[in-house]
Length: 346
Ligand code: FA5
Image (cartoon, rainbow, N blue to C red; front, side):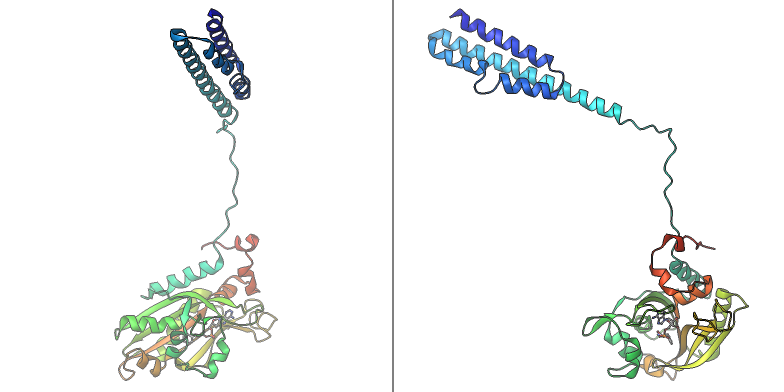
């Protein structure tokens, strides 16, 4: 029987040697698969236990257990060693040479749309205006009713929009910000601008887009008159475009202002001569304005006998077009880096 005991020792040594000799994890796996499978010589040794009696049986069992533990320990040790080796090799091969010159990432510019908002904001903040923002999705009530445009009013036709529900829509102008501001200030004087996006079912062309920006302005107080409106807008336009551009005030109509005006500025392409960009008129309209309608004041809790105000809505892209000489509004939305990177903050 001594042979069976010797055999356990021999096989154990052989397997441990094979484990220690394994050059990589694949070789180690192969040793495990061939030497330790159910039908392997080592596992077959257990069948000899039947031939042994009493103490020898116990001794053989212990020897097998010890051999198995020794093999498992050798396996675990080698596995760790080979894994560490693999990590070291990876680290060595993936070393980064930090002395190499870096890549140059192309940095775009700030969209001229934002540059103009910032410029307009700076001008009005310097005149003591507060900046407010309103929601892009408005209720019919704020977008139209509070702007003195009741249901079925013909002015609704000019501002057809994208409806979210029958009573909520993407706002067609920033004017509802006026009503929000008057509600918030409840009876106190107001001097705000509100920049933001507007949406209309307009046919896109060189000066019209279905999405565009406006900056709304509202001043409410005692004794505010049309002269204040004109002086403010002239000052703004002179700061924005310089002294040379011609500014034109035209009588107009908005249901929420009375009297109302539209303000045009001489075309950046033809300087007033007439060209396709200005549709032959020599001027491009950039804003609507007027004295706040008494109904709007009343609906917002301001007594029109005591308070008056003026309001205006400037088209942001139109200002950007005139300011930078851009001939087509659609360029602002095409995300062409070559276009955007031409503009920098002054
Ligand atoms: C209005 O939207 C009024 N809420 C403006 C206003 C405010 C009047 C306060 C009185 C008091 P209008 O529809 O004219 O008005 O638009 C104002 C400006 O927004 C236009 O002068 C133009 O610069 C710009 N605009 C209007 N529609 C478009 C469009 N489809 N694409 C680009 N810009 C537009």
